[in-house]
Image (cartoon, rainbow, N blue to C red; front, side):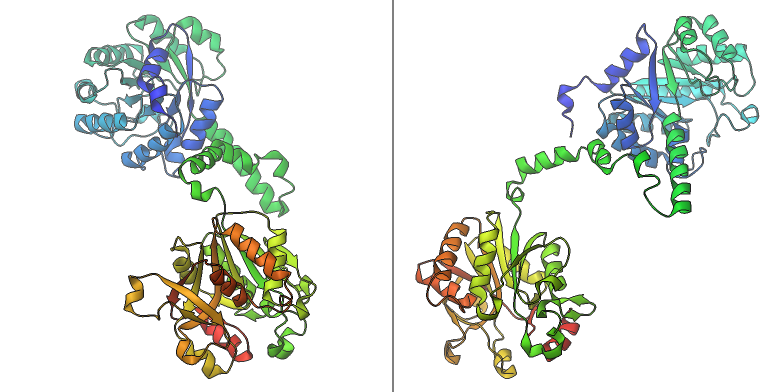
Amino acid sequence: MRNAGTLTKKTTQFRRLLDGNELDFLIDAHNGISAKVGEQAGFKGLWAGGLCMSAQYGVRDSNEASWTQVLEMLEFMADATSIPILLDGDTGYGNFNNVRRLVSKLEQRGIAAVCIEDKLYPKTNSFIDGNKQQLAEIDEFCSRIKAGKDAQSDDEFAIITRVEAFIAGWGLGEALRRAEAYHEAGSDGILIHSALTTPTEILAFKKEWGDRSPVVIVPTKYYATPTEVFREAGFSIVIWANHLLRAALTTMQDCATTLARDQNLLSIEDDIAPVKEIFRLQEASELQEAEERYLPSKNEEAHAIILAASRGTALGDLTADRPKTMVEVRGQPLLGHIVGAYNSAGIKNITVVRGYLPDTVNLPALNYIDNPDYADTGELLSLARALEADTSDGNDLYVSFGDVIFKRYILDIIAEPDDDFVIVVDTNWQDSVNLGRAADYVHCTESHSRNDFYRDVYLEQAGETIADKQRHGEWTGLLKVSKAGLPVFRDVVTELSVGPDSRDAKLYALLNELVRRGQRVRVVYTTGHWLDVDSVSDILAASNFT
């Protein structure tokens, strides 16, 4: 965001344009990105025209877009730029009361000036049957000007009054009479409007009006007039009123037509702005820098390792041509469900350890490490291979198995504790016994109860042979290691992986070694929200789980 304290006040900037001795120019803008384009092109001010502001909403220039909708868009435009904005305020959206409220709201949003036209509300665009349009009574319109000037809190906020006498076919005399009345009522400048293709009317007006107050023009119809003519006549500001919108419309129509006809992007890609140009205009890099200042924990992305090297022979023919992690549940591999859970928690840096038929494990946007010795090595060796390849010490490391699916809830509860090592333990360990499958059981400092909501629970032992009376739960296979704990974790994995009993070691041996060395492994209890897929019946259960 821009630091407003380092910039000249926008109302002051506009006053310098309006009252200066040199001819200045405003370009149309109708949203934040077009406002940025105008500023970066070198314009000193912007025109938020009624035609363009309504068109970007897809409605007519007849006050079909409410003034609050216009105000909302103006706020984005003002926030996106450091130059002043002159709003085409149509008729002021009503009588004197509406005008003074409008002025107050514009000042709150950093808008430098407003132009109001002397027609009746709701207005019609001046170039649509202009000679049939009715003008406001002079005294009534002057009440709008006076109310607006009384409402402003910044003395440099400007109210420009747009004289529509030429548009309505009233002629020079009426234009001058109205301009004089508006000037006396407090108008800061006159916008004299004409629908002719030559500047005859506006030049005649300026000659008679002289320098009583600044005069602004909009040469949309008399565009062939050399700019030097305006400069010599002594006009204050020229507004290019709708040209960014019209240029964009032509380009969008051409692009849409081409894509509809050719049905490929190659035909247009070289002729349109790259996506990175949008990022530049949005100042995406500033947000990245701000995140580094204000969100230091986000600087280093959490990463995950999924151990998915095994075949899963218990699944029979289902794993004849693919490993267990690629067996589909509801149209998506198990690995896809696991990655989806990590992604939902904002974890995108994921490494998968492959083994059996590695080429079949090929989901996009993942890192892959192969363990060619998967058939006669255990989980610990696969983890060691992954850590050897992944040398980054990110914020947190998550480790899980390629056949264990879990819901986002599991990641949320394991992320909360600040301990260096955290595991999730399911209190319903009897299910594994009833199903007759092996499981990694744990014995902790205390069993799950209401008390563990108030006291920290830590692992004492993990393994498949812990006695029933000592079991406090089943480890889900999910482990979180903090950034601070990563160096110790790497050292322990390295030492264990070269030991004599390492070749077929399971991951619970690593947990036990951490505890043996005095590291505290925090336990977070859950009941459900995960599933270890070992058998065909588990595949069926997984269909309901997801």
